[in-house]
Amino acid sequence: MGIDCSGLSQAVYAARGIPLLRDSDQQFGQGREVPLSPDGAGYEAGDLLFFTERGRVSHVALWSGGSAGRIVHAALSRGGVGGDDLFGGEPRMVKLRANLVGVRRCV
Image (tube, rainbow, N blue to C red; front, side, top):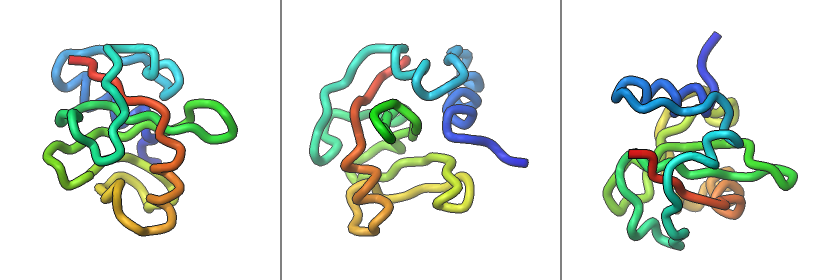
């Protein structure tokens, strides 16, 4: 059937021996905060990016590293697991970027 966004981040971290809670809103409380940046400066590969919908954290993505703005996430809107340019002009990325509320480092 597939994997959702929080299941993906949980599985990636588990592969490195780092336990994460199950849901994105729970994961949002783990690790340490990384300051939000309009261009991703200061984010490191594996950082978790959290997004809201209707006032609550409902989506998580993994920063893939570098300065290109690439994230890896699972979302029905993108057809499953894949990579996207968070800073690109695609309408769903513009919306996602507008709902970024936090970045956490759990390593």
